[in-house]
Length: 295
Ligand SMILES: O=C(O)CNC(=O)[C@H](CS)NC(=O)CCC(=O)C(=O)O
Image 1: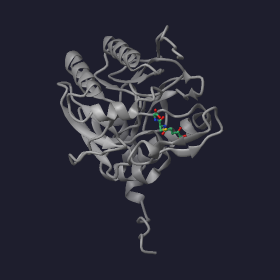
Image 2: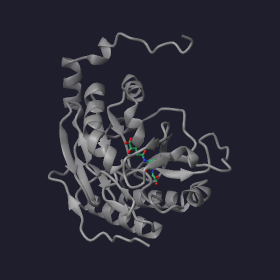
Image 3: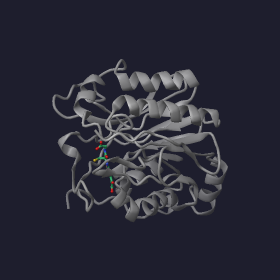
């Protein structure tokens, strides 16, 4: 088996209360949990109060998504108890990237596929919100793996979710959702100030599109983008783009980390956000309603 231990931890150039964890998960679930735990400790020591993990932070590249999803049907699941315990122990808010689960939000159980759920926990480890990834990555990519068929393993969610945090109102999205601006317009209209985008962007597509799209969503919604990504070589066939970034509502990249496991942090200034919106009120200038589905 291909195992790449984390030998160095990188940190961005500034520090703040909001911290993204960039991970290089490997085909070993225990090692991934250790990596996450270690990075959380680094972030906490730097003063983080809200920590965001990438998509599939524990199950990525393990080939065990369905096995994990079958166990994550309530709060006693291993990954869900891990994140709740981390939030409680350190007294921090946590966005648990995504965790696959066989239980839908309405309580019903899936028998084959999983939902890819992004959980928001408060500093006591309580669940505040859950968003299920809506747009699934069924795409041919010119990389080593060539073909991605996420929908063979995942059932898409159908509901946008916003939640209030001590840092502002958060609109929740995951990875490939980034390419669908209508979701982010909805969040802007629902009063979002922060947008979370835990990701595992491929190196090939990320190289071409990641920065442009993350900054575009920040600029057009006038929100802070919080985008923790996977960033490294996970298996001989799987490489991710990294470049986790926090982007201001003006489109400025406040902090970023190109590759490797590490922590990217910054502060979000809601006064700056309000100034930008007051001077350039794009939301009030929206002219076109969504097209009616009948035509
Ligand atoms: O498969 C896993 O273990 C974890 N999940 C992912 O890696 C997901 C689905 S395959 N990746 C993306 O959505 C990449 C999107 C992307 O790269 C793009 O939009 O260009």
